[in-house]
Amino acid sequence: MPDAILTAESRNERGSRPAGRLRRAGRVPAVVYGLGGDNLTVTVPARELNQILHSESGVNTVITLKVDGGNQLTLARQIQRHPVRGELLHVDFIRVDPDVRVAAEVPVNLEGEAEGVRSGGVLEQLVFTLSIEAKPSDIPNSIAADVSALDIGDQLRVRELPLPAGVEAMQEPDELVAQVVMPRVVEEEPEAAEEGEAVEGEEGEEGAPPAEAAEGEGEGAGGADDRGGE
Image (tube, rainbow, N blue to C red; front, side, top):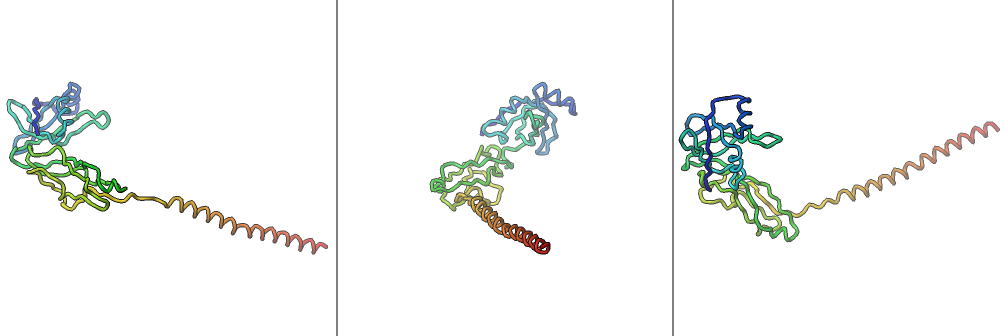
C-alpha cells in the first residue's frame, strides 16, 4: 500500500486548555512511541490526518511522520474523536519497522451471490473484521471472499479465507465467517391467536352455567320464601 507523509510539530505545553487551542487552530495533539525510542509529544494537521484515515487503507495506512528534521515510520492507533462532532481529539502513533510484522484489523468483504441464496436461502455473515499479522507494507486494505459457490447448509471459515502472501490470520481457524441457511419462518402468532380465541370461547361457555345456576338459585330461594309466605 502507498505510504502517506505527514508533517508533525513538537509541542511542549500539556493540559486541556493548550490542547483546545491547538484543535481550534486545526491541529491534533498526538504522541509518538515504540521500538525503544523516546516518547514524543507532537501535533499534526487535522485535515490531512482525516484524509489519510478516510482513505482506502484507513487506519492501516503506513504514515511517515516528518518531525524534528527526521522521518519516523508509523501507524495511527488509539484514535480519539469527539462523541458528537466526530472531530479528532488525540492520536497515538506507534513506530513500526518495515521488516517486522505488526498486528492489524482488516475488514472482510463477501463477494458474489451465493448459490443457496438463489435457491431461497439466506446468507449470514458473522465475522466482519479479521485480526491479522503482517509487515506494514503487506497489510491489505481488506480481505475479499467469494461466496458464490456456497449452497444452503454450506459454511465459510477463517482457514478458508484467501489471505495475501505474508499475511497470517490471528483468529481461530475454525471460526465461522459466513453461512447460508434456510429462512426462519415464524408461524407462532396465528396459532397463538387461534388458541386465544378458543380459550375465550371456553371461558364463556364455562362461565354461563354458573350465572344461570345463580339465577335459578335466586328464583328457587325466592319461590321457597313465597311458598313459606303462602
